[in-house]
Image 1 (cartoon, rainbow, N blue to C red):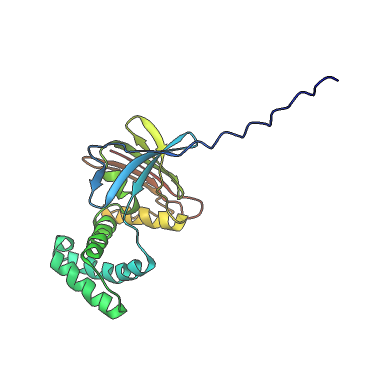
Image 2: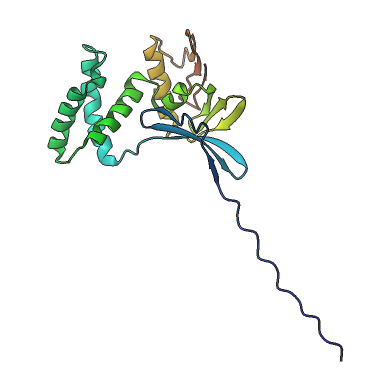
Length: 212
């Protein structure tokens, strides 16, 4: 009798490639207090991520009560956000009203978001302050890319809706004394260190490009 050939079982499939995370600058990972950026490779695509302090729903409740107070006081004192005693006193009042506790880290976190949203560029502020980014391109509310050095990279930053993107452009116009509208949708600003081009379109999608 001819001996039967033994068949080998099929080899198991190779494990999925791990997601690689790379610090874009080990010597300078922190761009501003509480903001860190990193390059992340996923499925062969390199992405630019920003990492910011997490805000829970309770934190946003405090923030939403605190923001109008800060804006009102900024009219009298442009440096009011940087004054620890002012923020601590106002946060203490609000947290007492809401019956929740607060800490020094809590104050730092709220100061970061107040500075970013009121005095800075909101969601894209981490991209603005990173000197390695040459251009920020937003083609729709969920599509924000950057030119990082010489590479075009997607980011983990997005607007929640076209309405939020519209509001961002309107606030940006207000910052520089311009009122974009459906009749006058183009905003083209050339500032000393930055150039802003935006198209306001509340019906389909707005867009902007910021060159540094």
